[in-house]
Image 1: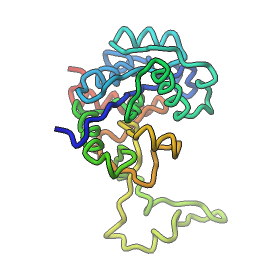
Image 2: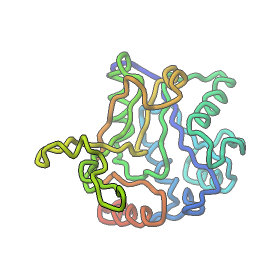
Image 3: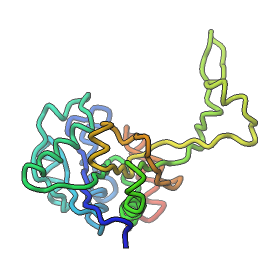
Length: 238
């Protein structure tokens, strides 16, 4: 039994007009559109109270519905610009349901550009957050940084190669401080603390560690090829 029974709204954000990789949210990844992977993962969850797709694009909405996604509204154009905040998108969805008599304890952001989820990632993360509901405001999925560990990062000073972070460079090379990067596998927050801080990064944010092969999200075509190769290697397409 969960530490606390909480109602959780899952939001899959997918605006049209992506520039680096046009139509990336519906670009075919193996045998289905990119967004379909996240929709199907969300639909398998037993702990999400409801999951929706927030989009401004009619074609994305059509594809989402074809793969079982719920699109209860079309996102206004003012929330689908390059500079639009994910938090404004979330609050728009919460306001929609609040106006229709539905309220949620927590909200989960599931980015379609991070399709490398295990079947139980969503529910495992929600359970961890639920069990820590009294002492945590949010949960963030983190992947350990390997090849680009900050300790080894460099900068250029006066045309010479220099350590990027001088404090870290003083540490023993045999015992580097572990570093992590937040990936879009899952973000969870109490609705109350998200409204307070307008961020998933809060004073009491807990973590959900993902595996090395999950440390990819689609930003450009090279990411897309990497994710496709990983899925083939892991037999995801089967």
